[in-house]
Length: 226
Image (cartoon, rainbow, N blue to C red):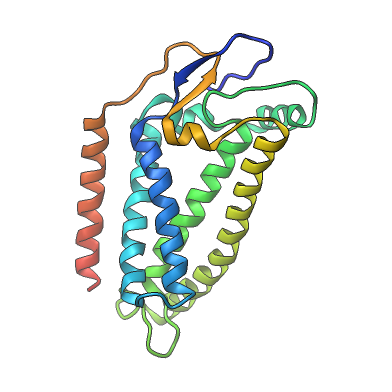
């Protein structure tokens, strides 16, 4: 549950589980590698596709973990309606201090949008084509109209993704500079000074099983597209 309040005692408490933190930083690395291989010619496009498959597996894991994972990782914990979102936005521009246990309402929506755009990128990339010598793994297995749409979506998603990443980084910096709220450190250590009761955490075994199933499915997909 996201709780926001002011002038209440806080204590250093575990809020993010290890699977969520590993997902976050691994995704950062994979997205950087995707841009390095796709836009700057580092390594080869074959590696771009491999990193794409890895990104797809990671995203599918996070989407599932959003339903079966720890309390602060579940969508139901940080996805709020318009009223809660509006209250949070108003509070952000007021002098009232506020503290969220996990993602705040605005951050929750930004997380969901970012996940969906990344998922769009990973899926559309499977069937893209530059019309010359670079085709996605499934470009020859789907109708030409699908290839054209996938290519357009992939290029559109790239620009949208850059904008979202820029907004995400800017929001983190503004929270640090204006609110004195370091959002990066808790995503490294898993701990944060908050006023909250005991939080529910899923076991590492559950995370391993979920990721193993997802990884096996994506690996099978990669063999089919080879």
